[in-house]
Image (cartoon, rainbow, N blue to C red):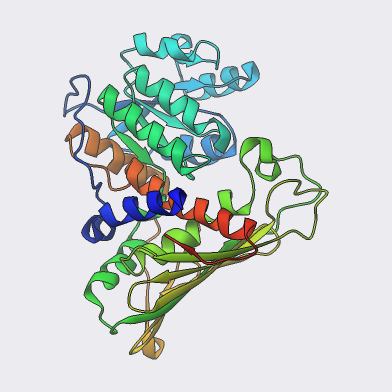
Length: 368
């Protein structure tokens, strides 16, 4: 009962307008230090796995408001390789033991946490205490309680906290958000959203380990959950969920697949799937005057939009990560709210916590 009351209290306090626009429901806490509007912010990547090396580092060569100036890694070989490749000064390269010394480095304005989910809370809080603005990959943390701790830590430190919901910064998703507000095809009755891929077997990847906060719901799950929310501009009022695991030797203690159903005000529902067992990626929105959506909807490129009566819409290809980091850092420079603040990550984790409760109770309906 207490969990339900906490969720209900939180969700009712969140303004629907804030969800629709992507702005924080809380006031922006201005920078703890002066930021010159004419300079690029310096960013340090914390965690040098594929997402950092294959996507964020190349994207930072294309950004206008931020540049790569620091690295944090526990692997000396990676520190040497990428430090040399991107001309990172040795004094800007840290490991996990001396990370807190980053507080003394004026070249680093922002840290981007690109670590396993179980490490997000620790390093967001440590970065905040070091006086650095923070970007944290999704999902924000292991549960809503951790999210609240992270938000408070950043507020106390006077630094910005953004969550890496890159799709909020690209035009296909922004058009879907706009249609949620304008309702060009009438009221929405149902949403279907699925995101997943077939993970190669066998695997020792951290995404399949409970120790690191792995599982489909914690990796691809935020995509259909976010899609159900931003395509309607509404917050769910109840959730049911079911989990499946066809390969328990690989997925030990985490879900291979999760299906979940979200109930929204006005008798609108969303049926969602996230999985490591199949390649699937689509967002379908059923409205009074027809169906529209994106297929695929959450890829790094190749997105495609469709409308009723066979019409389609497309935008020029862009580097999503560069756009995301530029806009996040511009909001810091201009001292205004992030489009994807910590509160947005918290909203998702409140719902994911309720999904887990539903699974524990055999698919019971959990009121938010």
